[in-house]
Image (cartoon, rainbow, N blue to C red; front, side, top):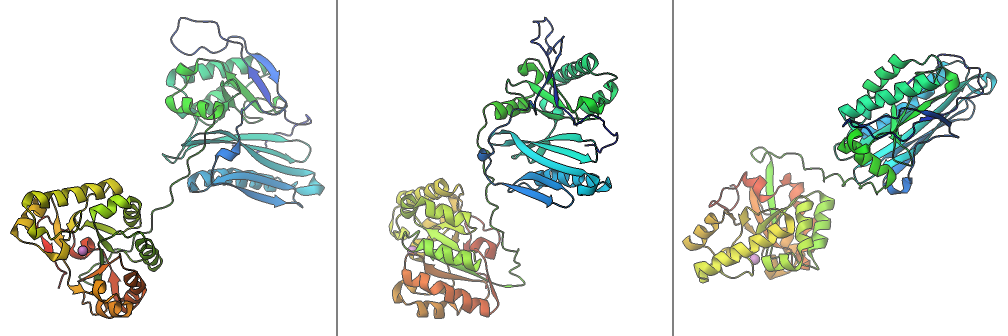
Length: 471
Ligand code: NI
């Protein structure tokens, strides 16, 4: 926040707490600042700190230079580059100020030491206190910066986020009273500007009182150190909901939620009018012993496929279908129990369709838009029910007969005959099919094919439409 401007004769800056007595009850609705602040020197800091162990993904960034007597450590939190840039930026600016002072290192008797602690943590809030002690020679200057960050909204929080408008008046009254009562020639106007700008250090003490801090030299002579002022007021009216959440994160810290891993990088958009596209499809799963291995292969090869799953299998292995969707594959319905739909009554067909769709939605959160009738058996009755249920029918243009041959080499050979726009039929319940998939991908890639889902291939499937491929 500041650089050293004034030489200081005192041995070192001392942090002071200008604390208030408990307020007298008043009739006004607003928060009530203390009327009679008292002066309590503190050994180091009145900020309440919490264990850093609750912050998952916490690392540190150090700058060490023994010759120049620079020792700077700031925290970093995985997955929050904006927060990390602020934390690192404080350290870098302080070190740059120190280097610019021209009295760096042992001969100039200068040093800089930057350390940190955690002020609060909750599921979506984290607060850090950064402390810089800089001495380019005979004097020292303390700079304390607090960084509060909302990890859900990905934004930094300042005093203005923590305090209500009425509360801000109470903060200003507390600060100006404390400065006038205890500091010779305080810069009251400067303090008000810093408060209005939301710049001061902010946190809470062990009693949950809001603390507002200034750097040394900012509002008072350097001999007063870095003033820290407690605002004695009812938190309910002083603090906004965010401010109250920060107070709770200080008094009752909770684990910071780990940011979810970044979603798998989507395959670059494919234009199947320009590129040679093929859709690999896998029916009758998910298979407990085979589908996980297939998904591992597809992930390694960065290939998205389409799975036509059976409702009964989805109910048995919901986590496998959820994984299919999570890893970027398309999931369509293949009925509940794989009957030949054309031999059933309309009521029974509807039940097969609805039960399977509900199981998929339940397991994945996604309502399927594609349906593949078992055996490809369809008629006007089946078509009408599927259309009413919002499904497009996805058939195929290349039948690998993998279920019949159970021979990986033959499956590769059959799949490799695909033409641009093909939908290739396989089954992820056979180990020999999974064995074939690396060869299928290699053979088609060698011919210049790119792999897409059925919906990507046909482009926005329409209910009632039937797709066999696009050639
Ligand atoms: Ni089938």
